[in-house]
Length: 355
Image (cartoon, rainbow, N blue to C red; front, side, top):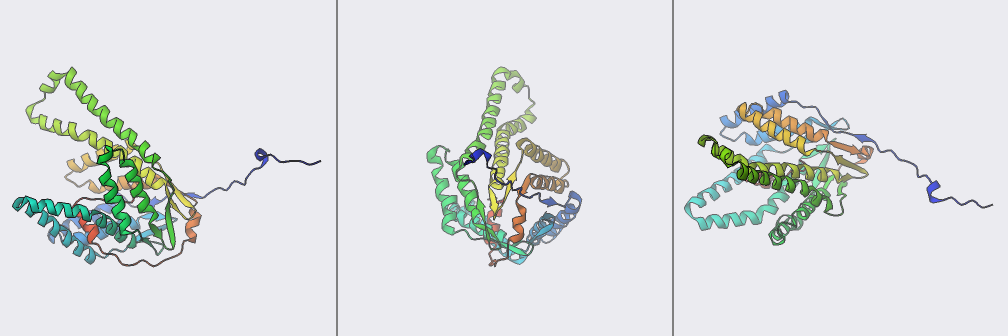
């Protein structure tokens, strides 16, 4: 008698992937010593030490971040960063002067800066990757300049023509470009999301919060106009600023949390991958309380606020299949220039591979 086995009776062997979290061994006290010396020497040297301060800060967070009990390393050259910083702030000064002297020249420089923005992001990604190591194995970034202009210039230019509807797709393409063009040694990272659906879902909560906030302001203005008029004149400017900027801050924080989860949650390396569980309200509280603490402490609690947010980033990540990382072998990492990184920083064009 023949016996046929149905699909339901077949049990595939369950492979349990090893799970592990990154470790952050730093704290506010140890970082404060780095931070206060950086501030003091930067002031004493009229800003020259700022390049060394940046290296010291990155080296601190790299050395205190452990993956499988091995710390990361940052090997950036402060002299190279200083040269890039001189170029960056020279450009800032030139743009500021032309704004007062010749408006047409200012407009031309700003257009040129906008056209150079993809190159700056591309250069920044290369410099950061090629100066970061884990277990002596270098990271690398091998994205094309053409790809950078596609995701940071051509696609963003199309956003206004779609009334903003293309924005989540553009962010998806930017994340995919960044992740899939990074490598650790001879192993390339992969971006596992095949569509931008998650990015459109991540935009829902920020948009809802934004419009609910403004709806609340309109309701208060219509129902309680006397209360608004009773605000002391000295506080009206503060009230107006808070009312205007608060919804943008709320929406930005919620969007930042969502995209951080999407970036880390779609990260893959060999057979290893990550999941991220950043909570919007928790991140909002960390940002807000850290800002208030820094203001009322004249900046002295900035290291506490910084390490607290960084620790939350680390604790929100869970790595799966990390045994595969032991098979990653070293590769060659070419030199990269720091000018793009410093110009991006000078104009506050942040490029972060994370939160």
